[in-house]
Image 1 (tube, one colour):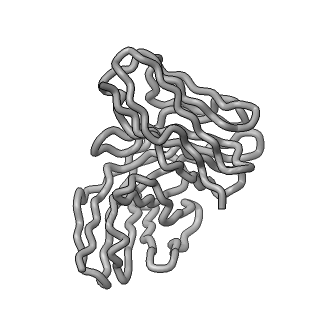
Image 2 (tube, chains in turn orange, purple):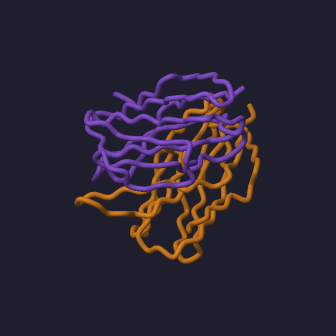
Image 3 (spheres, chains in turn green, orange):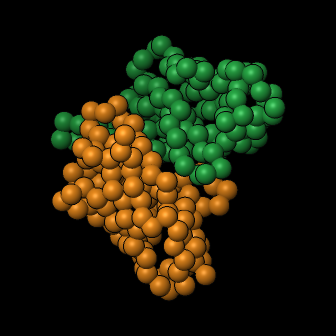
Length: 120
Length: 113
C-alpha cells in the first residue's frame, strides 16, 4: 500500500513571497502520478499541478512548480509570488497507474494536508 | 467548461435512514471515483467505476453501495446511516487517456443527526 506524508500541518507566508510545501511518499511501484490539490474554504478540490513519475523534468504551472526527487520519494510544491487567494489546504496525492481496456486509471491516496495562510 | 455535478449539495438525515448521492461526470469521462472526507481529514477513496463496471474498491462500508449507469452518472447509496457517516462526499471523474487527471465535484455534505 502506498502512503503519503505531509509533515507540515500549517504554513504561513507573506503576500508576494515564496513558500515551499513538503511531501514524501512510500511506494514500490514504478509507474505512478503525483498531484497537488488545493482545497480553499469552499471545500472544492482544485488541481494545482501534476507530475508523471517517468518524467525527470519538474512540472510547472505559472506560479506553481514542483521539486520531484524520485529516488528520495519526495515531491515538494513551490508557490512563487504568493497571493491572498492561495490561502487554502493543500493536499499531496499519489496515484498508482492501473490499466484496463487500453486506458489507465487509479485511485488517489492523499496526505494529511497542509494549511497555508497568505498574509497581506 | 462543464464540470462534475453532484446532488444534493447538502443532506440531513437521521440515524438508521438511507441516503442517495448522485454524481454526473464531465461529458465523455468514462471513470467515476467516490471519496469521503471527514471533518479535518484528508479524502479517503471509497469506490470507482470504469465504463460502468466497478474498477476498484477502498474502505467502503458494506452498508454502502454504488453503481454507474448507462449514461455514466453514478449513485452512492448509503443505508443504516450512522453518526460517523457525517462527512463531505466527493465524486471525481476522469477520461481514459486524459492524463489521469481527476476533476472533482463540489461535494455533498451529509449530516447524520
